Image (tube, rainbow, N blue to C red):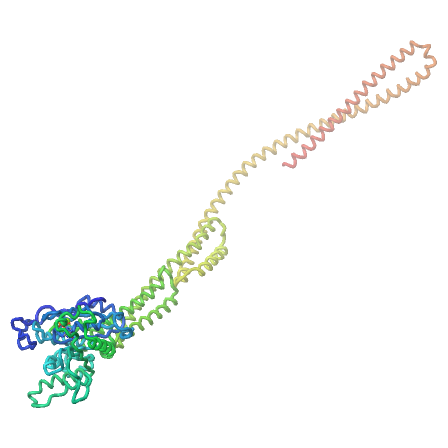
Length: 634
Ligand SMILES: Nc1nc2c(ncn2[C@@H]2O[C@H](COP(=O)(O)OP(=O)(O)OP(=O)(O)O)[C@@H](O)[C@H]2O)c(=O)[nH]1
Ligand SMILES: [Mg+2]
């Protein structure tokens, strides 16, 4: 945050008319023009809410035009920042806020886990504002800070103390609880460390010849005044109030920053070397003292973070706006309530995120895993709630948080189950799809095979299926599957029966035709057989006849051969007479030639007959083999 922002604004009312002003800063001529309205700016709330961890608040208040904004800028490690006015006109209006950039201050001055918030308060006793307004602004600045710097010029004298008469009225403008009437002692534990910062201090810190510290100087100034009680009562009341409201108090003095009077008007634009060295050194010590002395803003023992500070401010402002005064306990209870609700919401968000992360990418959880994760996330959420929900125990809110988480769990369980069911059904469908096909294609033909295949599917399914609906889906689908399978099988059996009947009918028809064809063949074969029987008989007769003829011819041949022998004998006998009986011889030779021709003719006839016999025998054999074949076909 590189510049201050308006923190608490005031609009309308509670202003003093300038023409009624006596300009010396007392409140005698106040003309109350109505309460006006304070408001905490959204910008400040937003910035405060962004602060992580504890906050410490240093605020400054005091009479207007006394260099408050200027010194606060130095505290922030900057020459600019809060507006520093050069004229007599009041500059700072309302309460401004600046979150210190730790890089700009001396290293190690601000603890790592602490954020310092500076509050610059509108100057008191300005001629435009009423006393009521001043007390309201003063009390807001006090109540919101953990280190309060009261700034004044010169020294701590009666006039300076008188300027702080507001403190005497603080008890009327700040309450610990709505119906209580607390005294300063009851309120003191809620008030910040008090530092009286005396500017342009030019006195020597020596008392009765001894050097004293600024703190001694303050204590000395706060000593009760002796004298006529009536005359000193007012003075002492202020002193008593300061002492009782601020038991933890200190004082710091700063010399005039520059020698030259004119430079005072424009300190913000001077360079470092223009300042008095002793002033620079004092400021350095002041800064260290304040940062070392500032503590985390606490209420009722609890540290405040930025958001709580913003909420507390809103509560105090709201009380003032409604005509009351800031009530510390009520405001704190409201802060706690809001903080607890925020803590509860943060815890619920944490739970929700952890649970949703588990099922990111559509993951399906087993029921035990879901319950275990719930318990872990619930524990984390409760731990977060307890760490953030200050001022506990908040049993009721914690129960509400648990209920809210239980509702989320129930919703997640429902979604998880639905996802599991969907995934399991899809998986089972995919794994079992082939079974119906196998039944149709008759790869599965009986219930044992079906069970076997189903068990294989179940094994694969159980390896892959996820989530709480794994068994339920299997159970439902098993029943459904078997009834579907039975229906499919019944349909197939019916279809098979019909097909078989058709086939039987077709075979019957074909058999009928085949029978008729066979019958015809049988009859044909029978006729042929009978015919061949006849032919056989006829051929047998013919063979016998031929045999007889052959034998007759053989006899004739034998007779002829006998005759040849006789003739040859006759030839031999007549050889001696051959010459003589040439004619006889020629005749005889002629005879012999004729006989030989005859013999040759007969031999040829015998050969022809034998050939015929062989032919008939061949035919007979052919016929017999044919007859055998026909009998085989039948
Ligand atoms: N004499 C003197 N003047 C100072 C000192 N510091 C700042 N100034 C001057 O005082 C004037 C007012 O300074 P601011 O810081 O605006 O004073 P302020 O108290 O914030 O004033 P308001 O916001 O009007 O109440 C300016 O001209 C500064 O230069 C100081 O230590 N001594
Ligand atoms: Mg100012």
